[in-house]
Structure formats: structure tokens, C-alpha cells
Length: 389
Image (cartoon, rainbow, N blue to C red; front, side):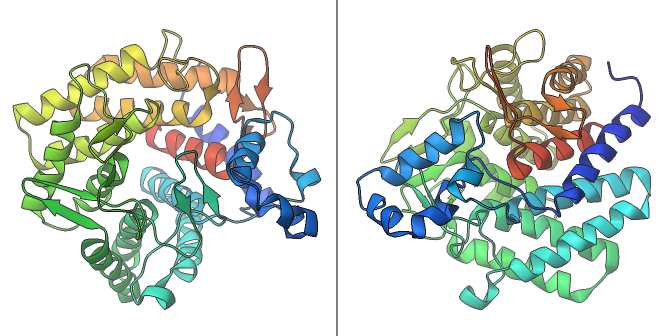
């Protein structure tokens, strides 16, 4: 199906026009608690019931009918979405030398500068959520609480902005954010190190992709050889013989959620391999990649939801597969990885792309959830298309 870069640029153009037509705003799968109905007397009463918040979030997420107008949930801008868009625009500018993408990138950088939590913490940092969120495991995310993933992405993006413009304000921002990460998020224990997911997480809670995103985003910017080696030790220690990593470890118990997070971890380790090309690092990456390829995607390029559960097919599983396998191809020059990435991309364009210029959220066995989430669907696929190009 993929015939040329011209074809992919046409898809990218349609997607960008759709994003622009919505003024860079949209809904999120987890935005239920943004409902204005919860501000009413009845809504406030419902919030008092145990587990109501979690149930409402999950119901809103999995409903294939978009009930946001009924629940009075408005489209909104989103910091994490903006960061993914900015990464995409920067990559597109480097690959095409088209100043339109440069302008798009710098516009997002200006937005992100204004969204920094600097005034609250005296260092630059970001939350990845513009709404209150409560997970099934009772974890909580808030707009005013810094998270490691968007803050690491901020470091990378403002470093890119500095390389592009040599504007000292960008230099100061990414250095401020990096120092904040080291002082507030980094946990070192003996021979391993990891990053807390949010500023106020318990030190015993290890969400592995929080540390992999740190490797992926900062390893080319700051020379911290010992620290990076200790973070690698975390992934070497926690990888199962089959090749998978747990989603999180808490109180010495591993919790599995085998989905796109496997790709996140591989991406971070690929960056570390560029930094430290040893047989041990390569073996761990290939072990993880083997499981990711053979167990988490079928022969058509369709992903498992959370292995071993197959349905629904989630757009972020698709986008991350495209990204990780094309990165594996570039680092190891194995055509199998290129073919896998292309196969996933082809299946996604055939089954989850709307000709109006947006990607669907999830595809079940019989029904498709076509709600056009800007962060979960559009920004992740724009990044995937940009990296594959």
C-alpha cells in the first residue's frame, strides 16, 4: 500500500489539516472528570460515592458512542499532545526542510513554554494531563503536579529548539528541567536507578517506561555514563526470560500490562545501545523485540490490546509498533524490522484511518470506536508517520 514518501506526506497533510481545523484541541479517552455536570449538585453528590470517579472514567473511555456533549465535556488543549506534535514537526522539518514545519514546531514550543509549572516549583516541568485522573490502581494525576514523561520530553524539545534558534531562553529551560528531574524524580539504590512517574509518587513504585523515556530523551544531551548504566541495570534485572517487562513494580510485586509500553522500553534501550554498544545490551533489546514482534502483533500487522487479550485494537499500540520497529531497523539494519513496521502502518491506514483526515481510537471484532481523540489518536500517529517517512 505504501508507494512513496509523497503518499505518506499526503496522509500527514490531511492529518495536520484536521488538527488545525480543531484549533489543536480535542478530547481524551480519560477526560471524564472534565465533565461540567460534575459541578452540579447531583454531580457533587455522585463524586462522594466510592469508586465513582474510576467507573465514570472507564465507562467514558470504552463507550463507542461519544457522550461528551451529553456529559458537557469540552474539547481542550493538551500539553502531552502538544509535545508529540512538536516532536513530529521537528522531525518533518529535518526531513523535508520545509519551513512550514519549523513554524509549527516553534509555535508548539511557545505554547509549552507558557504551560511550564515553573511558577509553582521554581524549575521548569510539566504535567501531561489537563484533567484530574484516577486510575484503577488508585494512582492520581493532576494538572498541577509534574510528571517525568512530559518533563523529559520538554528537555528534548527545548534542546531541539535551542539547536534550531540558539535562543538562550530555550537553553535555560531544558537545563532547569533536567536539574529538576535529577533532584526530585531520580531514585538511586545500589547498582540500579529509576525515575518516579510523578513528583509525589512513593519511592517504592517503579513505572518502567518513566525511566526508558529518560534514556530516550536526554542521553544525547547530558553525559551521565554511570547514571545511564544504572538505569539500564533496572531493565536488565526486570526483563522476563520471554522478553517482556512488567508495567510497574511496587512493594517488590510486578504488575503486567503488555502493550505499547513494551515499545517505549525498547526505544529507550536503543538509545542506550547507541551510547554503549555491548553484546549484553544488544541481547536484551533483541529479546524484547522478539516478543514484541512475534507475540504482540499478528501476521497482518494488527496489534494485541494487552497480550494475551487481542481485542480491541488500540491506535497507540499500532503507532508505537510503527515507531519501534523502524527504529530497530535503523539500528540493526535487519529488513525484518522494516517489513514489520511497514506492515503495521499499512494495516493501520487500511483499517483505522478516516478519509476526513483522522485516525480511529479502537477497532473491535465487530464495532469501531471512531472518536477522534487528539492526543491518543492523532498526535501519536503523526509522530509514527513522521518517524517512518
